[in-house]
Length: 319
Image (cartoon, rainbow, N blue to C red; front, side, top):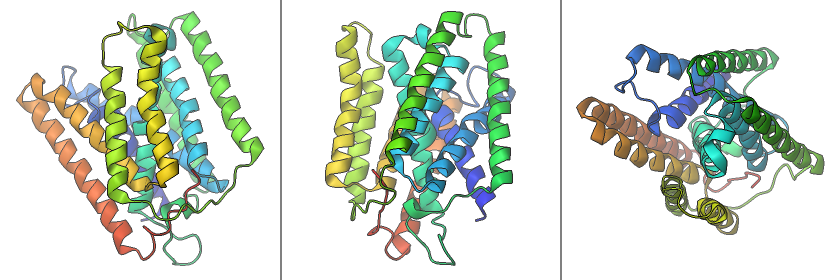
């Protein structure tokens, strides 16, 4: 598939996974179907295009997942703080939960899956591991993706402001800007320290990777939905602990990137189903279709990696 098709696939997968598969939006929901389709288009333009840009910045500079994750955090702060309910309104625990969703399901997992689906060449026609892929976008494509993100973000901001009680108050805007500056500084530190561009990790076990990601992200989602009755520090600890434990296992066991993304998306599948089934037949059918399509995409990505010589043995991400 050509680079534009790959970028479009990533943008669509990002919007569907983060907004529809997780259950925040659905075509058979309370809002009219036209509004839900409009939400899909706007989130595809905004967060989807941002995921494409984040992926290309990391690959163009020869860097890997630390850069992708930090850029995703910076983007998540902007999206949630300025276009969502507002960081101040969500509170510290709600903000951590929202950022986790953006980083995991809005950016990282979709990038890993699409790179596995389309393991393009670095030079000539030689298939390579996803983490060694070249950037997809030339300058015109980068400009188009940037314009789509800006226009989509502006449209979402207009929608947010037009809904009473939803747009961020001035103090929330200030908090969002401050947090965005901190996140941007973190990215700048990573770039300044010039992390190794290629760090071979050996082979990661695909099925163990799925299990680790499924357990860690399921625990994250579960804790995020608990009543806010515990002390703030303890709630934050419980929320971050599953992700921290998963991150340690990723490094120690050198887990497979596609397996980790698959486990995270399977968490989105069960979470969206548990939200949709009590709402009636149509939401349940829609969510089951989304789950079926997601599993089909994950299985296809797995087959692509399995059939390409050396791909599963040459996971070379910078972790």
